[in-house]
Image (cartoon, rainbow, N blue to C red; front, side, top):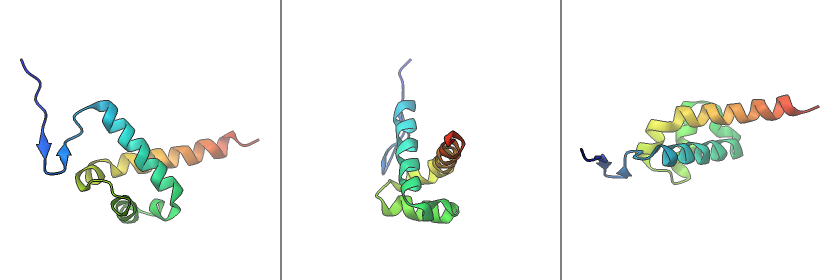
Length: 81
């Protein structure tokens, strides 16, 4: 049985879980650096596309990236003395 990889015009469709997780983390860092990206889904999409992320990746991962960015903000606030 051979492994198949789905390719789209923008490249592989999150073929590897490690690539997917790294991409989500980079997106979350971008959203955290630009607070206007956390105001809503549309703004997050706009910010990520303007930063050069592939359209298919943004469409598939924007929700997870926003959630991770919010988790980072909460973790930093909770860790303050």
